[in-house]
Amino acid sequence: ELSVRRPCRCGKSRQMLTGARLISLRCLSCGAARALPARLPSPACSAFARRSPNTYLTGRSSDRSLVKMASETAAAKAAAAQANDEGPTIFDKIISGDIPANIIYQDEYALAFRDINPQAPVHFLVIPKHRNGLTRLCKATESNKEQLGHLMLVASKVAIAEGLEPGYRVVVNDGPQGCQSVYHLHLHVLGGKQLGWPPC
Image 1 (tube, rainbow, N blue to C red):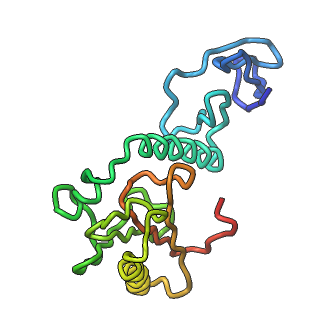
Image 2 (image 1 turned 120 degrees about the horizontal axis):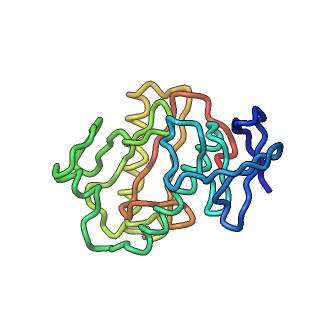
């Protein structure tokens, strides 16, 4: 069983998770039990963070990263199940102006805008204005070579404009196992700090 530290009325702090569905905490000292919240606190509250359906962890930043990873994975799987090669995506709506975005670059073929959930001090996306079948990188064909090259050039141009000359990372998530959540090819550009390796 996974142990966590939470204060108990008996004055001891070491408690452990119990139950088949891990829905309660039991103090190792006095045996007192209490239910876990049905809805977990926001990330601002460090009481608990859900790691998986069968595990809870304390709300340290490393644990919150695991929570985020789980939620992103779930979102990617849901997006894959609903992916439509022809229908408009949220990125199409940003291109058309129906959804606002913090756009930092655009030309005839590409658009770059800041990620609404940045994972680095600088985090922006580069997307093609016309998908041309590029819902995923794995669907690229010979006919997409120029378009793909242009996206990389835009990523470099904007990265330099954003002060990322010391280095940055370009990421393309592809498919559910690649954690792709929008089926409109896009490049993530992240920088502004020392990045680690491996990334996952």
